[in-house]
Length: 413
Image 1: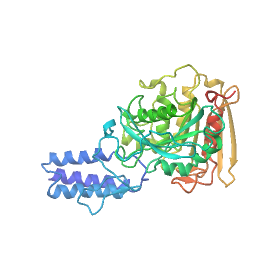
Image 2 (image 1 turned 120 degrees about the vertical axis):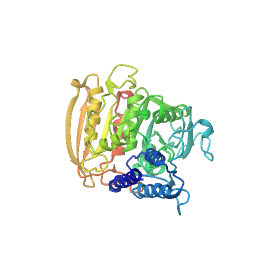
Image 3 (image 1 turned 60 degrees about the vertical axis):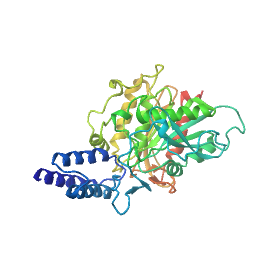
Image 4 (image 1 turned 90 degrees about the vertical axis):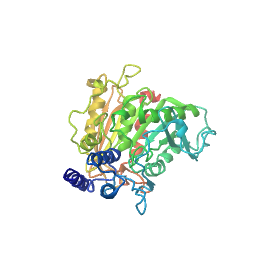
């Protein structure tokens, strides 16, 4: 019993600092609970009986109170919820097509212009729902293909929340592009974070990258989408997953938008994810050294990338933005030909920023790095109608759209 006693108190000690961390951090709850169960079994105790049951529930309650998304046992007074959804740590990592959640509207009819609808996607990899916005102008004035922007929400968010916070649907009406918002599910991550930090979700044709790429292709096939103008962007964990998508599907996405995110393959599990988020991930993997990194379908520069990050972000350290810039430069076939320009300014609402831009020979931006002075972990210029937004600006959504539309692959002259 001494071994068990020491283990129990060890887990409680580990749980205490978690309470001081933001609720959006990825935590391997399933791994923790499995480790607890294994330790109890090795001590000759069953997790469903006596003192062992009490200990397990106490640990789970401590983790839940810390906001890491553990579902309370069935005999608790009420389930632990996060962002309004109960977390199930025993659900499978992914679903087969036969396991697609019931009650979802089938994508049998295309959304009409101006509609924000729910759709579902399934493949041999699994299934996810997504929200789709078709602008009011779609099909009214022209039969020309339109751009598509794929938006990946952050932890604890959902597509509706993210759409409200970024105002991307209003920009879609203004500019005429379609927007897709894939939804992460609680069964895949208790805090609804995209699992950017897991090795199995950092590769082409596997895991969550394959699901999101599948959603992208489904929308592109169902609507008049210009294949040269498909873009991906995200916030926090969604931004980190957007980086993964750009790295593993470079032929699919023409440009990348990153807000408060992390570089590709900077972590491979939960501990290394925490280290990376704190800015302490030495030896971040070079794209050129990744065996599973998908080479570009044609030679040329890396995917154009625009990055926003607050220099007072205590959830994801701003050094991660610098690392994304370095990865983008390293992947560029002719980095020496890029011209560097730095602008400093203040948004209309008073947010000071520094905008460092690398442009090609035609003065077209290839990499933009916006440093938001005094800003935290929130979408710059976002609406208070969504979570994790900073209305003081500058407007990250509008700047991303401007950057996306400026690219060579976007068909501009």
